[in-house]
Image (tube, rainbow, N blue to C red):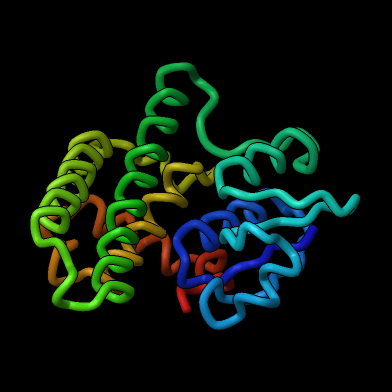
Length: 203
């Protein structure tokens, strides 16, 4: 399988980390939706990162759907995270909160970097910042005692939350100070120190 997109995207990175954690072979093609628009469009005219192309040439998009496909078709029965019902539900909830945090951080970056300063809408940025902080506050409360997030086996929530923590630290540190969420900060630091995360670094 091919995985297309830059690892500075939290969605691309979480997909790469998940595939690697599942021992699924893939080739990563580091194309930017901005700098390599034509090359990306030739693979996927929607130009959405991540994009994956399976061995039959089917083009897949959206990190969650690519991961779902990988778990259903490519993982040989290997799964990530807890299977006990209550913990599995919490893992899914935390994954959703991590994705919400990524979404709000990305919206902030796009508003700042793609829209001229005089056209940036302060009320919208304030609203998005509030949503980002609400997601992180919920994460901080819910991961108390969740020592299973980084495994073994590594959980999808653990991957997503650590990727979100690093992206926020790199891209919107003036909006959110990760140290205000010490459990998430510790999780992010621990994950980034592992061989898996070092093999697929934010860049």
